[in-house]
Length: 249
Length: 249
Figure 1 (cartoon, one colour):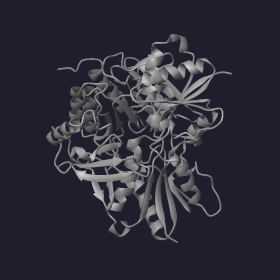
Figure 2 (cartoon, rainbow over the protein chains, first blue to last red; figure 1 turned 90 degrees about the vertical axis):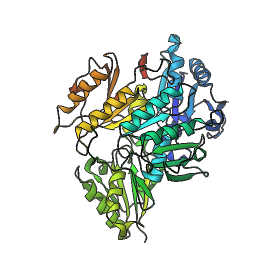
Figure 3 (tube, each protein chain N blue to C red; figure 1 turned 30 degrees about the horizontal axis):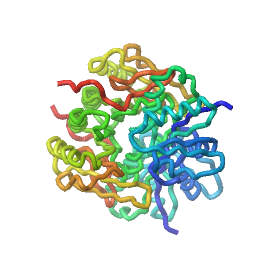
Figure 4 (cartoon, rainbow over the protein chains, first blue to last red; figure 1 turned 60 degrees about the vertical axis):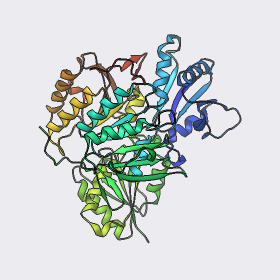
C-alpha cells in the first residue's frame, strides 16, 4: 500500500461548504490528523484512526502525518477554512524542509472556503475590490510587523481581512490595531465582525471604525475592514468594483 | 411563487471544487445568468432557462437577475471562482443601489474556491503568510492606482495574487507591473504563473522575478508573487508562517 498525505480545507463550519474533493479524501483516509475541534468534524468509522492534537503543535502534527504516510497510511490533515491561509499547509512544508527523506511523499493540498470569503458572502461583497489578508496573531511575527502591514494596507487603499484578531493571551493587542486604523482611516470606515460563519453560533455585526471596540472580536471572529468606498445598500455591505476617487498625490 | 437571486461561485473549473450548497442552488434554479463560459458549465435541463451574456455587461446582467426574481423566478448568477472576488457579487449590489424597489429581494451570495487559493494549493502554500489580492485590470481603476498598491504591497512584505494580469487590449501593462516589482523586490523573488487550474489546460510555472516575462501570463492565469521568505522545498513552493527577519527601520 502506498501512503499519502492530503491537507484538506473543511471550510468555515457547515458541511454544505465542504468540496466533493475533500469529502472523497476523507472517505479514502486511514488517519485524520489535526487540531481537536477540526478532527471532531470528521465522523468516526471502522478503519479510521483519529489523531486530534492541541493548538500550537503544528510541526509535530505535520511530522506525524509524514511518518504515517511513510508507513503506508493514507493521511488527511484537516484544517478549518482553506489549508493555505494561516493554516496547516505551510506547516507541512516547513516540516518537510527538514526531512529530505520525505521529499518523495505523495502530497496534495485541497483548497477550502476560507473564513474571510464565507464572511464576505454572508455580509454582501466587502472584498469586491483589492484586499489584504493579515494574521493578527503575534505568535509567529513581531507586532511591529503587524503594525507596518496595517499602515501599508490602509495607505494603499486595500480592504482588509483579519484572522485571529484577539486571544486571551493578548487581549490588548486588538485595541492597538483599532488605534492604528483610527490614525490611518476616517471614522466612518465600515468594519464587519463576523463570528463563526455558517455555524449555529453565527453572528454578524457591521459598525463604523468610530464605534468599533476590542470586545467585538474573539478567536472565532474574522474582521473585515472596508476600503474608503465600502458602503451599505439595504442590509448588505459591499465594496464597489471601480475606483472613482482621484489617486492621492 | 417567491423569486430569489443567488450569486454562486463555481470554483476554478473542476466539478470536484463546487460546494454542495452551490450544486443545490443550481438544481433549484429556473434561470441561470452569467458570462458565456460560466453558464456553459451548467447542464441544460427542462424548466431551466440559460441567459449567457458577454463580458463587461455585469450591471445589465445583475439588472436582468433582479427583474426575473421580481417576476417570481429562481435565479442563479454564476461566477467563476468566488463571486465576491473581482466577480459578480459587487456588480449585483451596485445594480441594487440604484433600485430601492428591489431592496427586499431575497438575495444570497454563495462562496466558492477562488483562483488564487486553488493555484496556491496546487503549488504548495505560497499564500501561507499575509497576502494581498489585486485586480490588474484597469477597466475599473486607473493604472496609477494599481502601481500605488503594488508598491505598498511590496513594501509591506505581503505576498501578492494578481487577477486578470494581461489581456489583448492592454498587452504592455503587465510588463510595467514586472518593472515595478523589479524596483521594489530582489531578483530572486519567486513568482508562480498558474493557468487554468483544475482544468485540462492546467499549467504551473514557477520562476524568479529576474526570469519572469509578460508572455508567461494571459487572462486565464493567476499570478502569485511570494514574499521575501517564499521558497521551494522539493517540487513545492511555500511561504513560511513566521517572520524571522528583523523589521526594517
